Image: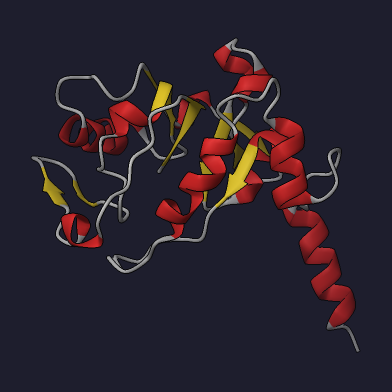
Length: 183
């Protein structure tokens, strides 16, 4: 579960102890928050849009728990808003009709932002470890995006090294695996 955001000038420091016990419960959903994600999300970004590859029935319930007053996310998009290619879900940011130079997506599955790799910031999967600082460690980088005209070359240089390249498709990965392991 990752958000798309446009950065603003209001990042803060957070302490680990604030975030070690961040369980949220609801009628039809349970979530344990990624360390530091519950730290004043409202202040971090000018606009927050939630795109999920999960079904609406699950994700909507979880977002209602995390954001009961609908203040954190200006829009919510679910699996039915995603594009499918090679059996994989892709998050198509063009649906948002916003300036691509000012938007980024953070996700633990880089394949989902393959259509917009230069807007994509990969993050490792989180497994309920409150000592995991992956999200917090991104904050200094996100601060650098605040005043730039176009986030894409900065994201590409940091994470992808080649502005025009995208993470490999599932078919490409399978072919490489089969070639490497064929006898």
